[in-house]
Amino acid sequence: ADIPICGGNGVLHVVEAVLPTLRLTQPPRREQVWNKSVRPQPHVAVCGGFFENQDILRVELRHADTDRPIERALRGNQVALRDGTRDRQRSGGGRPGATFVGGMACFADLVIVEKPPELPKKKRSRGDGEAGGVAG
Image 1 (cartoon, helix red, strand yellow):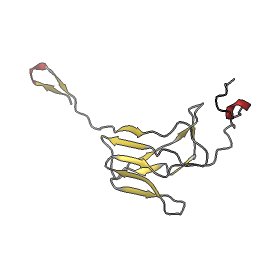
Image 2 (tube, rainbow, N blue to C red; image 1 turned 60 degrees about the vertical axis):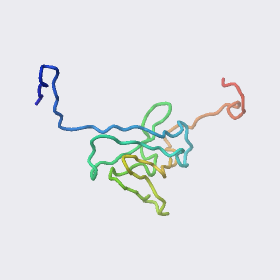
Image 3 (cartoon, helix red, strand yellow; image 1 turned 135 degrees about the vertical axis):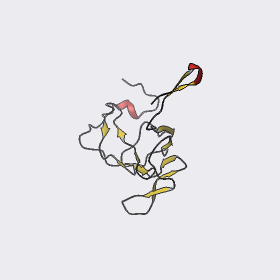
Image 4 (spheres, rainbow, N blue to C red; image 1 turned 90 degrees about the vertical axis):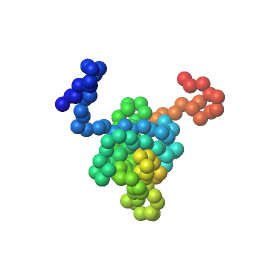
């Protein structure tokens, strides 16, 4: 229910849910290499309403040309929104994975896994590897 502000100067809207705001504070490079760690490590600030013991933040890899999400292309791509979370990777080794501390999610061990077979290989022309070459 709306509550009028005295003097007819406005209305206070009562909301039942607050949406969180996500802000990418340290974005990775646009171009990355298959089977390698994403660099620099993405950092995402989470502000506003979220359920601390229920919500999970997931990142996904999108194809640069089609903007299509690529299923199962990342390892270490989720973190529970629970302050002090230090997730461990499922694939042995005991390396620290994503962390969530003080409203900041850091994907410390985000790895692009093998390229899916349904994605075409990028063809390079001869001049692609030469410094100062002209693209045709």
